[in-house]
Image 1 (spheres, rainbow, N blue to C red):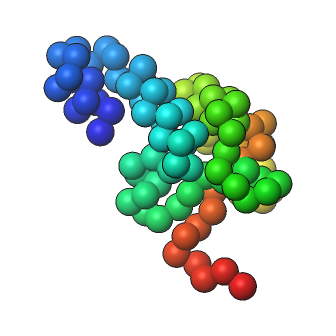
Image 2: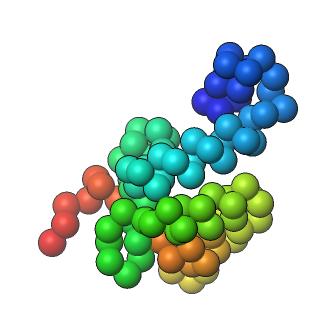
Length: 98
């Protein structure tokens, strides 16, 4: 999606990572989910409170996502390093809460 936005709006695909950064940071900070998260029904939440992440958490998470290595490196609980360092986690909206 970011590739298409960069090509369509800017006319140059070299801006794809910048579009990804802006889209991910803003949508996560404001609504807790990117377009892809909404599609598969997951949400980014604050690890301790379960609320929407703060702007700081969203910024840290997005920077680390752009580094890729932190997004593909997981701990024993299945949380990516980008989630641990930002204090966030993914919440599955498909599972009924108890």
